Amino acid sequence: MKTESNIEKILASGQLVVTSECGPPRGAVPEKVKEKAEMLRGYVDGINVTDNQTAMVRMSSLAACIIIKQMGLDPILQMVTRDRNRLAMQSDIIGAYAHGINTMLCLSGDHPHFGDHPMAANVYDLDSIQFIQMVKKMRDEGKFQGGEDIDTPPKMFIGAAANPFADPFELRVARLAKKIKAGVDFIQTQCVYNLDKFETWMKGVCDRGLHEKVAILPGITPMKTAGMARYMKNKVPGMDVPDELVKRMAGVPKEKQAEEGIKISIEAIERLKEVEGVRGFHIMAIEWEQKVPEIVEKAGLLPRPQF
Amino acid sequence: MITAERKPMEEILEFVRPYSRILLVGCNECVTVCAAGGRKEVGILSAGLQMALMKEGKTLDVKEVTLERQCDPEYVEELVTYIDQADIILSMACGCGVQEIARRYKEKPVYPALNTKFMGASERQGIWAERCQGCGDCLLGITGGICPIARCSKRIMNGPCGGSTQGKCEISSDVDCVWQLIWDRLKALGMENRYEDIMAAKDWRSSRDGGPRKIIREDLAE
Image 1 (tube, one colour):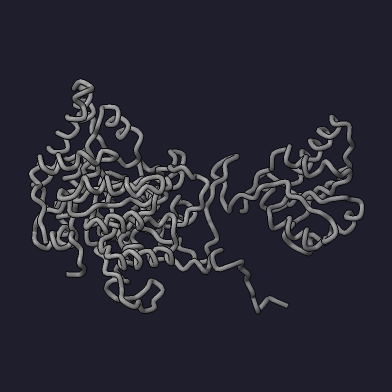
Image 2 (cartoon, rainbow over the protein chains, first blue to last red):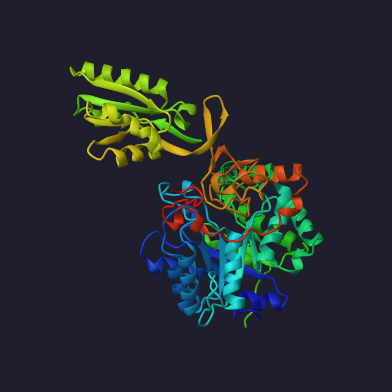
């Protein structure tokens, strides 16, 4: 084992991993973090904690991760290269590891254009692939990115994102291959609604044998309303929501739409379980965390393994 | 070329209002090509300022001069003949030209009439676009002659990110995804195999991050 990560242990045991996500509050409200994380206890193996998600200022991912760790749960530290240079990122990684946080997700991060500080300088000292290389070097060589030795290196299980639906589609397997070459251990994908296209991508991944080198967890996000389905289809860059899903959501009465959205998510999990290379699920119920236990349970993903 | 745009008239008027004699200096290089601060634009601004101030009941004496190159001490020296007759200098060059005037004429205030924008190229008549950030360590040989540092919104060197949609950047459908352009070009050149080489973390010391830069050519320096 490379790390003490719960995610790594479950993957090594051959079982499916379930992760979820918790967006920290926009203020100094530790109770909010605890409330969201508590809902997930016993239902997931790791909780992603977002880092200034959509370029909006929130409680730092590291601080919220520490709160969650102190509750006896397993946080996954998300970190973006948008707001910090390589010095700040490395010091936060060491700090996280010093608090027992052993799993992280390396991202470039949404452009400030989308957030509440579009006037901010964007850092992007590294891109996500260079970021993965840095964390791996810290772990496996015990060296900082600059080359000097680390006294007690942080042993992080390294995650990254992949969007099988972005353009150009023909580069999506190749870019994953670059992340693997850089040293990524697991991948959480963009929300999967277009199952056919996801399977085409996975086939490309498996044809190159990449599924043996990285654990892929497709992203699952339940839709609350037909309006949300339309919004995701039309307004969110890199999101692929097929017309028939929008129609299906719109085809049920408003008060039943949330239920339909959950049903769609469960069906997706059932189908994707059978896809070669799928090693678990990343369930992102955005501001709807209370629904995660129901999805996990109904999708037959309980009980979660204990180590 | 270095591109620039004229500042809003009201901002320039704020600079000029307290004075009655200005030396308005254009530049015959980049800002002439991008139609921001050449001889023609000097004439237009001069007339505009005089008219605006006339409406306020003031007269403005403007001496118009367009230098061959405002970033070159040799040409900036030519202003010596006019400097005593001016209260201030209003420069229509890029920031380099403004600063060269400030360095040479220490006792006269100098104001910029332009906002210097970027190093770019002309896309078509009247449209210029950013092409280079002067990072000091050119990558164009491995990116098919298209720069991700200057033209990717996240300056990602191993792109495209997950926001690339039909050839456009996630921040705006008016912005090309430079990694789509790079990929298309690599394909056209039969160099697709280069794509999976990881471009290592950049040493930004060669860029602005390493502090203000200077080139010293010992073979030429006196």
